[in-house]
Amino acid sequence: MNALEVRAAIALALVYVLRMLGLFMVMPVLAVAAMDYPDYSPMMVGLAIGGYGLTQAALQIPMGMMSDRWGRKPVILLGLLVFALGSFIAASADTMAWMIVGRILQGAGAIAGAIMALAADVSRESQRAKVMAIIGIAIGMSFYMAVLIGPILAEKFGLAGIFWITGFLAMACLPLIQWGIPKVSLLASGDTLPQIGQLKRLFFSSQLWRLNISVMFLHMLITLLFVQLPVTLLHFDMSLESHWTLYAPVLLASILGLIVMMGVARGRMPKRLLQVALILMGTGFSMLALQDNNQWVVLVAVVFFFTGFNYLEANFPALVSSIAPAGEKGTAMGIYASFQFFGAFLGGVISGWTVNHWPAETAYTVGTIAVIVWFVLLVGLKEVSRVKRIQLKGWASKQAATELKALPGVVEVRQNAKSNAIYLKVTREFDLHQAQLIVAKE
Image 1: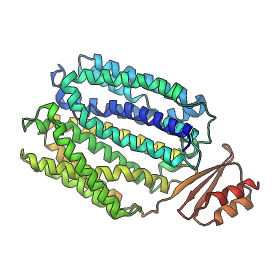
Image 2: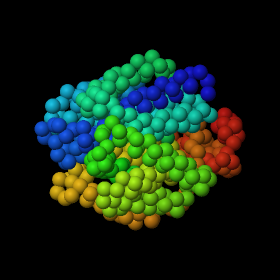
Image 3: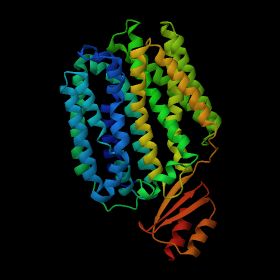
Image 4: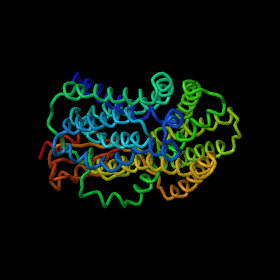
């Protein structure tokens, strides 16, 4: 990567980390730290933890499309300001109702699509995967960091302090976007951002809808877990600031489990391993439902859950990328992200409502049942091979398109007259230089 690409990748990764830290830090602490609010209830906790997902789900696709019209930076800057405003409202709240308003407003800063599109704009085709990988690693690390430092910050500064920190971190992202990223012209965005004409067809795709429902279940279950788990840990006389001592070995063990599963997969995406991950999550929830205040059972159960969660979280986007038609990944990922965030909202509502009406451990039973239903839905998912996606500027004649399709490793070729781009799905055997020569002849 050249200096410009390195600078852009680091700046965008930092924006993602600082923003996602703010969203995730409250998850492992809110159920306990909010007990002093006068309108505290499990239902309000569920809404506060998952509320951001509702507006994220609703606005993810529209804001991505807006970035094509208004430009990436203006949309990202607007989203960060809205996110910061929501953080400050939540920080100033003296009731959970106002905290929920702040969380919902946080979610309205739905800029994930615009950030990824900006990353594509500032990187060359040959280096784009590296830039995206840096951002992807940053997203994953932000979750682990948030789970570990959230309880410590909550004990030191209180729940309001976490929201204040979150708001200031969002404000710190503004100069990173404004001056840390160079001005560039917008690229054709069919494989980066949603296109309105593709929404209906991809929404009802027989394979993609299974993945969309799957990521909804995945984030519903992680939210459900964090509504209940911090309360469960109180039974072991663990103060909030000491919760990280359980989360740290859990995350380390689950990452090692992820590495083992990825090694078994050997670069493929076998359906059997997806099912193993689901079984691990279901086993974790069933153990939590039956643990009878046994700390070691809880520890093992959460390791099982996170091992399965990490594997699915890492592999679902690659599955969407492999299944989505060439030139339509942006739309497929926009729909996928909307289901992902709606799952977070759904998990908060379901867990809060469940604990409001039944014993708290019932939430874990609901999680077990949800995994069983999910397992059945995933049976119809077909095996797919991992592919790369290539975007070439220009237009190919019928003859050139035929030549491109005949190249070794080319799975699919699509053209978009509106964006003047050629989109390819390819395997490892593909030679980019050969494709560029064919297009250059036009």
